[in-house]
Length: 117
Image 1 (spheres, rainbow, N blue to C red):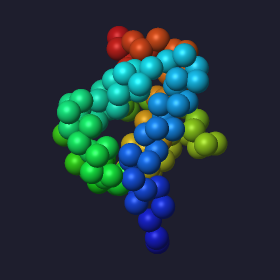
Image 2 (cartoon, rainbow, N blue to C red):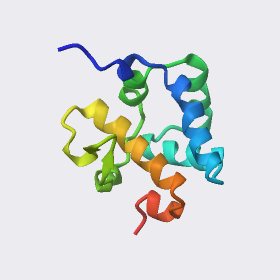
Image 3 (cartoon, rainbow, N blue to C red):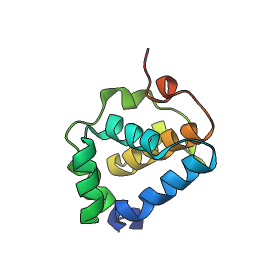
Image 4 (cartoon, rainbow, N blue to C red):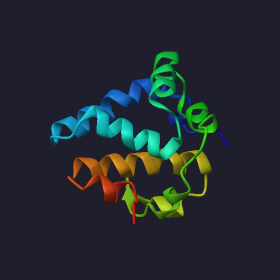
């Protein structure tokens, strides 16, 4: 079976859309970055380098230093699909990020988005 095209899409090409979605709703680029860093374990410097390198989504998540174990608490629907039901690991990670950005744009508090107790 062929890979989904999002896997080979540059993370840097989608990142501005995440930021624009957040900023349109009064949120900030720093909050988008905080979500990405929380989810992947990247540092701000390494995230900037990954964006500069035009790394694809598959590699971006495969190379993540520490995928946050609390990401399993992310539930809900993105693009009509329940994220917790997605079997393909890379697609699930991408949809986790999509869901978190959606929550940010909907005005949820960062503590809730980052699944803090």
